Length: 238
Image: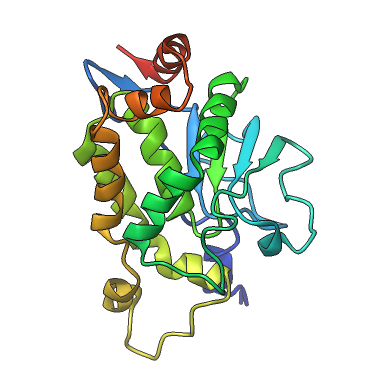
Protein backbone atom coordinates (compact mmCIF):
# COMPACT_ATOMS: atom_id res chain seq x y z
CA UNK A 1 0.00 0.00 0.00
CA UNK A 2 1.33 3.43 -0.95
CA UNK A 3 2.28 5.76 1.88
CA UNK A 4 2.59 8.85 -0.32
CA UNK A 5 1.13 11.93 1.35
CA UNK A 6 -1.26 13.44 -1.24
CA UNK A 7 -0.82 16.91 0.25
CA UNK A 8 2.96 16.74 0.02
CA UNK A 9 2.68 15.42 -3.53
CA UNK A 10 0.41 18.32 -4.52
CA UNK A 11 2.90 20.83 -3.10
CA UNK A 12 5.95 19.30 -4.81
CA UNK A 13 5.78 21.77 -7.69
CA UNK A 14 4.68 25.29 -8.48
CA UNK A 15 1.05 25.81 -7.48
CA UNK A 16 0.41 29.30 -8.88
CA UNK A 17 1.99 28.85 -12.31
CA UNK A 18 0.40 29.89 -15.57
CA UNK A 19 1.33 30.93 -19.08
CA UNK A 20 0.09 34.40 -20.01
CA UNK A 21 -0.50 33.29 -23.58
CA UNK A 22 -3.89 32.89 -25.20
CA UNK A 23 -5.35 36.19 -23.96
CA UNK A 24 -7.13 38.58 -26.35
CA UNK A 25 -4.94 41.54 -27.29
CA UNK A 26 -6.60 43.85 -29.79
CA UNK A 27 -7.25 41.88 -32.95
CA UNK A 28 -4.82 39.14 -31.86
CA UNK A 29 -3.93 37.02 -28.84
CA UNK A 30 -0.89 36.79 -26.62
CA UNK A 31 1.56 34.04 -27.57
CA UNK A 32 2.14 31.09 -25.33
CA UNK A 33 5.69 30.37 -24.22
CA UNK A 34 6.65 34.06 -23.88
CA UNK A 35 5.72 35.02 -20.30
CA UNK A 36 5.04 32.68 -17.38
CA UNK A 37 4.05 33.83 -13.89
CA UNK A 38 4.25 31.80 -10.70
CA UNK A 39 4.95 31.50 -7.02
CA UNK A 40 8.57 31.01 -5.97
CA UNK A 41 10.32 27.86 -7.24
CA UNK A 42 11.76 25.66 -4.50
CA UNK A 43 14.61 23.13 -4.54
CA UNK A 44 13.38 19.72 -5.61
CA UNK A 45 10.27 20.96 -7.41
CA UNK A 46 9.13 18.66 -10.18
CA UNK A 47 9.10 20.22 -13.64
CA UNK A 48 5.68 21.42 -14.78
CA UNK A 49 4.26 19.58 -17.77
CA UNK A 50 1.73 22.05 -19.18
CA UNK A 51 3.94 25.07 -19.94
CA UNK A 52 7.17 25.74 -21.83
CA UNK A 53 9.92 24.63 -19.43
CA UNK A 54 12.56 25.41 -18.34
CA UNK A 55 12.41 29.18 -18.78
CA UNK A 56 15.31 30.91 -20.48
CA UNK A 57 15.08 33.87 -18.12
CA UNK A 58 13.86 34.15 -14.53
CA UNK A 59 12.89 37.52 -13.05
CA UNK A 60 12.82 37.06 -9.27
CA UNK A 61 11.09 40.06 -7.70
CA UNK A 62 11.80 39.13 -4.08
CA UNK A 63 14.00 41.07 -1.68
CA UNK A 64 17.41 39.71 -0.74
CA UNK A 65 16.21 39.14 2.82
CA UNK A 66 13.68 36.61 1.51
CA UNK A 67 16.42 34.54 -0.14
CA UNK A 68 18.70 34.12 2.88
CA UNK A 69 21.73 33.99 0.60
CA UNK A 70 20.59 30.82 -1.17
CA UNK A 71 21.06 30.23 -4.88
CA UNK A 72 17.95 30.33 -7.02
CA UNK A 73 16.70 26.78 -7.73
CA UNK A 74 16.66 27.47 -11.48
CA UNK A 75 20.12 29.06 -11.65
CA UNK A 76 21.53 25.96 -13.30
CA UNK A 77 19.12 26.00 -16.22
CA UNK A 78 18.14 29.66 -16.67
CA UNK A 79 19.55 33.17 -16.54
CA UNK A 80 18.30 34.60 -13.24
CA UNK A 81 17.91 38.29 -12.42
CA UNK A 82 16.93 39.35 -8.93
CA UNK A 83 15.04 42.63 -9.02
CA UNK A 84 14.00 43.73 -5.53
CA UNK A 85 10.83 45.43 -6.69
CA UNK A 86 9.58 46.60 -3.31
CA UNK A 87 12.90 47.11 -1.50
CA UNK A 88 12.57 50.20 0.64
CA UNK A 89 8.84 50.44 -0.02
CA UNK A 90 7.40 47.49 1.90
CA UNK A 91 8.94 45.47 4.72
CA UNK A 92 8.15 43.97 8.10
CA UNK A 93 8.78 47.42 9.54
CA UNK A 94 6.90 49.46 6.93
CA UNK A 95 3.66 48.04 5.54
CA UNK A 96 0.90 49.49 3.37
CA UNK A 97 -2.57 48.33 2.27
CA UNK A 98 -2.20 46.56 -1.06
CA UNK A 99 -3.89 49.24 -3.21
CA UNK A 100 -1.45 51.80 -1.77
CA UNK A 101 1.50 49.43 -2.11
CA UNK A 102 0.79 48.83 -5.78
CA UNK A 103 0.65 52.58 -6.43
CA UNK A 104 3.93 53.08 -4.59
CA UNK A 105 5.49 50.40 -6.79
CA UNK A 106 4.47 52.37 -9.88
CA UNK A 107 5.80 55.60 -8.38
CA UNK A 108 8.96 54.51 -6.58
CA UNK A 109 10.01 51.42 -8.53
CA UNK A 110 9.35 52.71 -12.05
CA UNK A 111 12.99 52.22 -13.10
CA UNK A 112 12.87 48.61 -11.91
CA UNK A 113 9.65 48.00 -13.82
CA UNK A 114 11.25 49.41 -16.96
CA UNK A 115 14.20 47.06 -16.42
CA UNK A 116 11.79 44.13 -16.09
CA UNK A 117 10.10 45.13 -19.34
CA UNK A 118 13.41 45.38 -21.21
CA UNK A 119 14.71 42.08 -19.88
CA UNK A 120 11.48 40.37 -20.95
CA UNK A 121 11.71 42.05 -24.35
CA UNK A 122 15.26 40.84 -25.01
CA UNK A 123 14.87 37.32 -23.57
CA UNK A 124 15.68 34.50 -25.97
CA UNK A 125 12.99 32.12 -24.76
CA UNK A 126 10.28 31.86 -22.09
CA UNK A 127 10.43 34.37 -19.22
CA UNK A 128 9.33 33.33 -15.73
CA UNK A 129 8.23 36.21 -13.50
CA UNK A 130 7.77 35.38 -9.84
CA UNK A 131 7.94 36.69 -6.28
CA UNK A 132 7.04 34.66 -3.18
CA UNK A 133 3.35 33.97 -3.72
CA UNK A 134 3.12 35.16 -7.32
CA UNK A 135 0.35 37.56 -6.37
CA UNK A 136 1.37 41.16 -5.62
CA UNK A 137 4.74 41.99 -7.18
CA UNK A 138 4.12 39.44 -9.91
CA UNK A 139 0.60 40.83 -10.36
CA UNK A 140 1.83 44.36 -10.99
CA UNK A 141 4.51 43.18 -13.44
CA UNK A 142 2.09 40.88 -15.25
CA UNK A 143 -0.45 43.68 -15.57
CA UNK A 144 2.23 45.94 -17.05
CA UNK A 145 3.42 43.37 -19.58
CA UNK A 146 -0.11 42.45 -20.63
CA UNK A 147 -1.36 46.03 -20.84
CA UNK A 148 1.68 47.05 -22.89
CA UNK A 149 0.74 44.30 -25.33
CA UNK A 150 -2.80 45.66 -25.69
CA UNK A 151 -4.67 43.21 -23.44
CA UNK A 152 -7.93 44.65 -22.10
CA UNK A 153 -8.32 45.70 -18.47
CA UNK A 154 -11.06 43.17 -17.67
CA UNK A 155 -8.90 40.33 -19.02
CA UNK A 156 -5.92 41.47 -16.94
CA UNK A 157 -8.11 41.66 -13.85
CA UNK A 158 -9.46 38.18 -14.52
CA UNK A 159 -5.93 36.80 -14.72
CA UNK A 160 -5.02 38.55 -11.46
CA UNK A 161 -7.90 37.01 -9.51
CA UNK A 162 -7.05 33.53 -10.80
CA UNK A 163 -4.50 33.47 -7.98
CA UNK A 164 -7.39 33.23 -5.49
CA UNK A 165 -7.89 29.55 -6.21
CA UNK A 166 -4.21 28.82 -5.59
CA UNK A 167 -3.45 30.93 -2.52
CA UNK A 168 -4.01 28.35 0.19
CA UNK A 169 -1.57 25.94 -1.45
CA UNK A 170 0.87 28.82 -1.97
CA UNK A 171 0.74 29.55 1.76
CA UNK A 172 1.24 25.86 2.49
CA UNK A 173 4.37 25.86 0.34
CA UNK A 174 5.57 28.94 2.20
CA UNK A 175 4.70 27.17 5.46
CA UNK A 176 2.37 29.99 6.40
CA UNK A 177 -0.95 28.10 6.27
CA UNK A 178 -2.20 26.04 9.21
CA UNK A 179 -3.62 22.58 8.69
CA UNK A 180 -7.33 22.74 7.92
CA UNK A 181 -9.64 21.17 10.50
CA UNK A 182 -11.57 18.05 9.42
CA UNK A 183 -14.48 18.98 7.20
CA UNK A 184 -13.02 22.37 6.18
CA UNK A 185 -11.88 22.74 2.56
CA UNK A 186 -9.71 25.27 0.74
CA UNK A 187 -12.92 26.69 -0.75
CA UNK A 188 -14.23 27.41 2.75
CA UNK A 189 -11.28 29.69 3.60
CA UNK A 190 -10.62 31.19 0.18
CA UNK A 191 -12.39 34.44 1.02
CA UNK A 192 -9.90 35.02 3.84
CA UNK A 193 -6.90 35.08 1.50
CA UNK A 194 -8.42 36.47 -1.67
CA UNK A 195 -6.69 38.86 -4.04
CA UNK A 196 -8.18 42.39 -3.72
CA UNK A 197 -9.54 43.41 -7.12
CA UNK A 198 -9.36 47.11 -6.22
CA UNK A 199 -5.57 46.87 -5.92
CA UNK A 200 -5.00 45.79 -9.53
CA UNK A 201 -7.80 48.07 -10.74
CA UNK A 202 -5.84 50.97 -9.27
CA UNK A 203 -2.77 49.95 -11.26
CA UNK A 204 -4.80 49.72 -14.44
CA UNK A 205 -6.39 53.11 -13.74
CA UNK A 206 -2.90 54.61 -13.42
CA UNK A 207 -1.90 53.07 -16.73
CA UNK A 208 -5.12 54.36 -18.31
CA UNK A 209 -4.05 57.95 -17.59
CA UNK A 210 -1.61 57.47 -20.49
CA UNK A 211 -2.35 56.93 -24.15
CA UNK A 212 -2.28 53.18 -24.86
CA UNK A 213 -2.30 52.39 -21.12
CA UNK A 214 0.90 50.67 -19.90
CA UNK A 215 2.59 51.30 -23.24
CA UNK A 216 2.15 55.04 -22.63
CA UNK A 217 3.24 54.69 -19.00
CA UNK A 218 6.42 52.95 -20.15
CA UNK A 219 7.05 55.66 -22.74
CA UNK A 220 6.72 58.25 -19.99
CA UNK A 221 9.53 56.43 -18.18
CA UNK A 222 11.93 56.26 -21.10
CA UNK A 223 10.83 53.24 -23.16
CA UNK A 224 10.85 53.93 -26.89
CA UNK A 225 8.16 53.38 -29.49
CA UNK A 226 10.47 50.86 -31.15
CA UNK A 227 10.68 48.83 -27.96
CA UNK A 228 6.90 48.85 -27.54
CA UNK A 229 6.46 47.74 -31.15
CA UNK A 230 8.95 44.91 -30.68
CA UNK A 231 7.22 43.80 -27.50
CA UNK A 232 3.89 43.56 -29.27
CA UNK A 233 5.43 41.74 -32.20
CA UNK A 234 7.03 39.29 -29.80
CA UNK A 235 4.08 38.74 -27.47
CA UNK A 236 1.04 39.11 -29.72
CA UNK A 237 0.00 37.08 -32.73
CA UNK A 238 -2.80 38.03 -35.09
